[in-house]
Length: 405
Image (cartoon, rainbow, N blue to C red; front, side, top):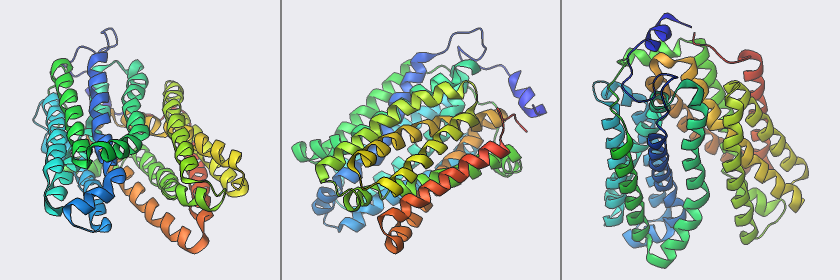
């Protein structure tokens, strides 16, 4: 362990669970779970509400879709610079602030009368989303002892799983029943509940290591940090290259109906829910092992889709296992990253979130190119190769539990 990591271990944390002999602050962990559920739900809502949103504010579907792009781009910069711009503030105040942005974003979206207002709402969401994600693991580290961190991260990612499974179908149903503006209003209510929970449960968390702009470059000089980031860029880009175009694959290869595709994607979400817990169990022994497990299983399922995806049962089973595999990856990557740089957990969390966003965007773009040139199996084949390459990279370059450099 480096001198900086050793020093941070001796700093006087100001939460009820910073030492192993103290009780984990599980109520605060659950309040973070509710917050991340609200943020991820709000992020995914436009996918299920895009058509009525565009028609109501008088723009094309493509223009309305740029609200998703705005959120992702802003989230990258928010993730990178949150630890720097808020370094003098109590961390619970920062968490509260990001949850307030979630509420304001949903209210502004519900009241928007044009594309400019809707884009402004999504910019606010991008700040809250990127900032919250970048601080999440570092905050969890201060709320529970190190031995309980994998379980805490698994609980937090349960919020992501629920949002992933429910946001699109529930958003579409409620949008048809109540109107798209009412759905965003409900999202604001979820944010208010999360804020109240955080207000009641979050202990005082004064800032510790003061991040500077140079901190990001110093972290990039650490070989273990670069290894995690490279793994994210390879594995996550491969996953999203394939998954972004999973519907065209299911329509063209096994030729499933829209109703059946919806059920298969529901199975994917349920698989991800359980994969999250299995990943957390593996992380307790080794975070890199959880990443290898998830990446290898994703590679195997993608390969099965390419080779035997014409069969309904193979396609349905492989997609469900794909969700299970991916569920193990975020908890493994988040925990691995904060373990290799515990002295700058917030700053390194920002780097991880930025890498995720870049990987998601690049994977979707590359997947589109492959689908256009090689058909529906092109992106899925790339997913198999990329996730396999990522698993091999971790296996050979990150043996065992990676130590801070």
